[in-house]
Length: 107
Length: 273
Image (tube, rainbow over all chains, first blue to last red; front, side):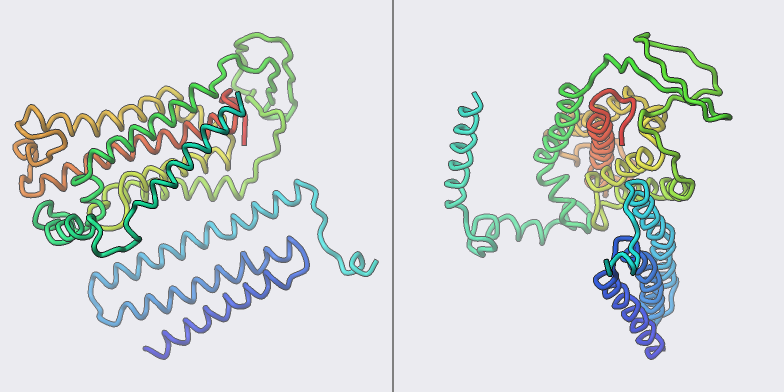
């Protein structure tokens, strides 16, 4: 059980790390939003899965309820985070920001 | 005149800063607050009020007078925003969109009201097609945000939260509606008068609960005097706090929406962010 929890937390950390590196290293506005929107969402899923499992160590109605509440957080982050990213990208498109291309960089 | 204002601001700021030198150090164990008050709050809160959250009990009970005027300050902020910004003249130019075809009518004359059929909708000047994804997700999320806001208000006695936080969350759900759809949707959904009544009602609930204590034989804001009125006399102070928090929540929620609507539409309540 503990191993599974640690594994899930590590997976979550890996995704968060990937997201953080991606936000810094990606070349432009749109591609930076890609790790911000995707990896953080998956990272939070893995992390909360690990924490919810850990919380179920002493199985009781209360700890089960708490775990369900944790998954509610994930549910709402799953709804809200991609939508927020989408709306930011949408705003960028409407404001007329051009996307990055490799060719443009060379000139 | 402006120069005079700068001098007054600098003088007042300097005086206030000078005053802070007399304060006890941060976290000083021998300061008056730490020697008399904190111990009492920490030791006696459960005994006195049956509320596990000491912050709430200090905020809404021991120092309820302070919180009452904080609510009044928030109400005044909303009122000031309304008085300074509200513009009843209305724009002369208006745009109506024929929903089935998307044809836009540009009305230029200054008629106050122009009755249009249901197939037309009022449109912002720089209207952009609203995004289906954002609209749908916000439509799903807003009720949950509002339920959560009520939970935060109702649960202020037991966990972090309370009227101010819950009211802000509720107000932000209204603002989310305005951002994801448009301002007109929010203004049509909750009329300006309703918001004003809610803001005043919140303060009235707070002051009302405080004032009812007096004819019941207690001091102002002394919730123990309300014991004959409630179903659970042991928890009367907790229930009094809950009532007060609900009032604060009403006031904060309405004032958030009033400030937002007035600022984004420059007081015209027609179009904005």
